[in-house]
Image (cartoon, rainbow, N blue to C red):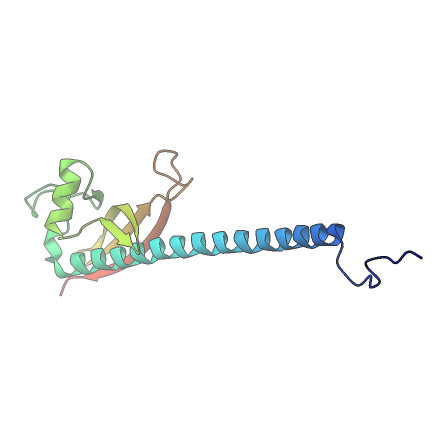
Length: 166
């Protein structure tokens, strides 16, 4: 009489192991995708937070400047015939005028958020409302991943402030 070596058939077959590994693979792929999405959202939020801080610093610097000296567009004479609405750009890595505007307002537009370093460009528009009031619009732009300056679609944050002559 012949006896078989395995009387107990309660073991796991190779097919069952392979199916369970495929299920685990699908679950881990989903977890990895969720982790990558979380990391990207954290980076985007950090860069946006830095842009908000930069916009606030710019508005504060413009508020602390003399009311008649808000034409930081390279014209050294604040009493010159300034149009009712004018714009200038601030950048630590841009043209000489943009760098001069950045140093005049003591603003560094190259910022880091965590271990991400990004360059920001600030566009300031000053609009004279009347003799005692000006509206200042600060637009901070930065690029990240597919939204870049070169394709004309950077991220942006806008702050509008009203400045009154004291």
